[in-house]
Length: 153
Image 1 (cartoon, rainbow, N blue to C red):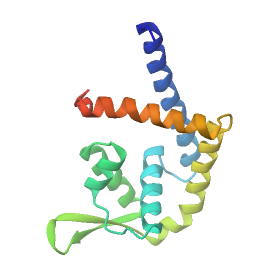
Image 2 (cartoon, rainbow, N blue to C red):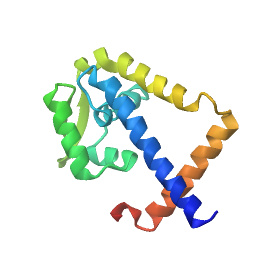
Image 3 (tube, rainbow, N blue to C red):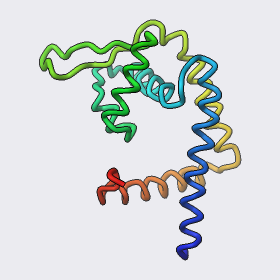
């Protein structure tokens, strides 16, 4: 693929990212959240459902690719809205665990519904094989940047 096509592909990835975030922001705004806040809550809810309750802010950084400062800001806003609390780790006072409050349960189905709607919309014309290929290729691009220190770009 020549440089012009590669540049076009990168612009398309960026446009897709912006379109997805815009669509999710429209949906999550109905419940007073941003796309990023909804994504964090959904991640935490899924982890809780899987039985993992000891999630630290640093774990969110690793899982989402969001900076420590970005995670800190998101958690502060979600804490202010009453969706989570930070509890100290009894073994290490420097670490905090993120705990969801009962208020999140009210949002859980709605956030999950919106996420499922977006996924369904994006992949409605894909075969399973195409979706897996896309995931593999995007992951390959991400790992190439990440392994080369791409987080600093």
